[in-house]
Image 1 (spheres, rainbow, N blue to C red):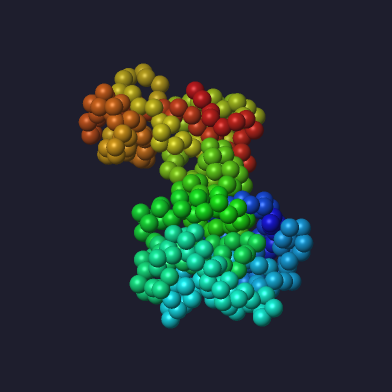
Image 2 (cartoon, helix red, strand yellow):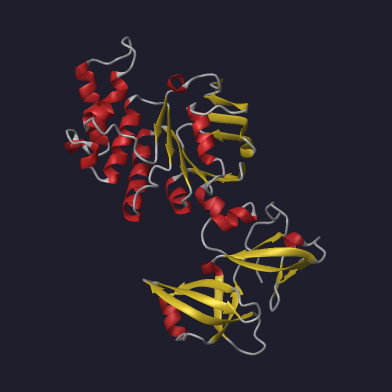
Length: 366
């Protein structure tokens, strides 16, 4: 089932949670609502579920207006961050709950309920825990039971609010892989809220970046990472280095380094911000007259095949983060405190105050 929200606005007192948001969620896709705390992603999820009423706008399920429907009519499954399992019920009873409270005319028989519940427990790989109680389960197991309970009523849409937020990093990574495999098997239109960019990029078919109640960018994970539409998206998705300068006649002056920016050919001495990720920073030994930004190596961390470097600019004192291969670091025989020269291999440049993507593809080069 496809979902569409049109011109959704919601305020809480003087706080604008959603500022006329319009989005389309394709049928059968797993979509991540990604953004910092307070950006409106959970409010939007609750409005889609029918748990919150918008001040204006509409919610359409498969082209039909569902704005006036309550939660039951919308046939959504909802998974919360903190499991929300009934502590006095066994795992089996928790999963069976939604089936047992259905109106008598729609309620399955006891044997049908048992078969359905055990099938779901096998699906989430926890059928061996059917007689246990929530306090006897790990956090990851509880969240899988919460998902099984949401699926029991055969929802048309699955909504997950920070489903793995209360779990430790290792369990969270295992569960998001498991969720991706489960979705590929079930193909239920699913929307999940997260502030974890790695989680969104790894799991989702589409990512919706939100900020201050508005949508900043929508796209496939690789597209939003490789082609950010605004400075906010660039800064939010992964580690990034920021260089301040001025753009004029198709070039940007970053102090010791000047770079071609043909996409900003009309700029006339305009303030500009350039972004480059750590793996896009080239490093050479310092040599007078060499084109680049002089830095000093202040810290080096070897992580498997990667060397992570913290470099302090000699002109501004700002820290630049770089990543090179361990073999490259060994070949350079780097020493803390020594002078080096860096050059961004590629950058994306925005005119300051501009929230639009450059007109040419990203990857500004020297």
